[in-house]
Image (tube, rainbow, N blue to C red; front, side, top):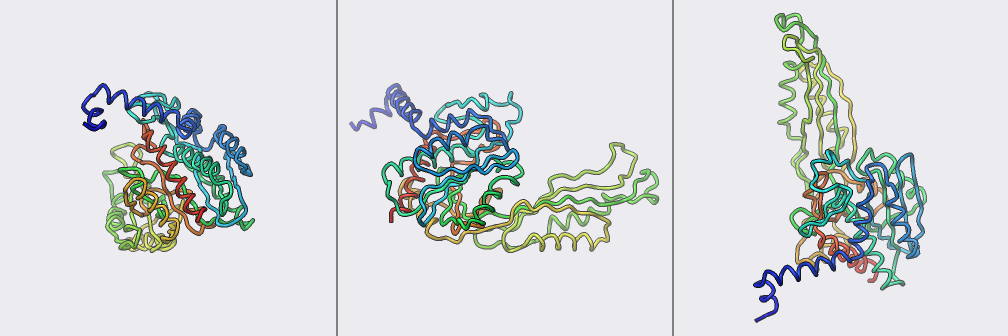
Length: 402
């Protein structure tokens, strides 16, 4: 009888083997580094020493580490080597707030392993990715001190916040120095159902609008003496919801338009409100520019003769990396290691890839499963973190040893 059959038929023995495997995982360098980072409550834009932990490890390897801090934001640019190609790993040490601590099964900044999952704020987004690529670089350099190219890390503590003092500032400095990136891997949690099933080769743009429709406040019993902004804008809102902004293009679905808040009234049931406020958001592809979408919205509103103001905020322009060597290598490594053909798409929210693309020839995002990001009881599968580090290491080998 094969040994595997004995293990799975004897539950007690299976538990013993599983516990031994779990203990080996806990002794893994990647998991140890991850736990160390997860203990730090680095709520955006505060780093609180996470990058110092990474700097200590990187300088031991021979990296030149530059701190580029602005206001409360900590940024790190670390590089080893001067030759091309330059492979850059990018990520962030900041995490989103935890919400109500009492809703967590375990304290959000006390990393806890349960049923092969590691629970903590930032476990998936994205300290697991940080830990995985740092230890991947360590192993790679220990085995290949003479490699063909350079390796860099771009790390910020302002990705989950306003994003004004983080990666965008570092990119400006690198652009001025003509320090350009050939291949960039952002460790965002891109996987959906299984590790490695999704690679992002771009992202949709994001634009928000705050619409104020002006009416005239009055007594609800005398509507002829007032102008009800709710009634005035109702048909226009329906048109905005039903409008076909585009049909979508390769890698990009149709542009999404969603209302997030609508508010009018003063809290009394006998008053016609004087204005209505509506917040909405576009997630759009390169098929439209932000300016074109703004013009289309305003044309719909103008068709109804409305009096209104709109405040626009573009938080990210769409970008795309055509499939090239980086996507080819990454798909091959994932197929070899996990027997999964990774899907390539641009779905999801924004990332700092939108800034890095200005100086990167090719850029992708690849990280752990994103099912619990920004949620209570955020978690990551322990084994996935270890395997992710191995995947990053093999991508490096394919890019820098050929």
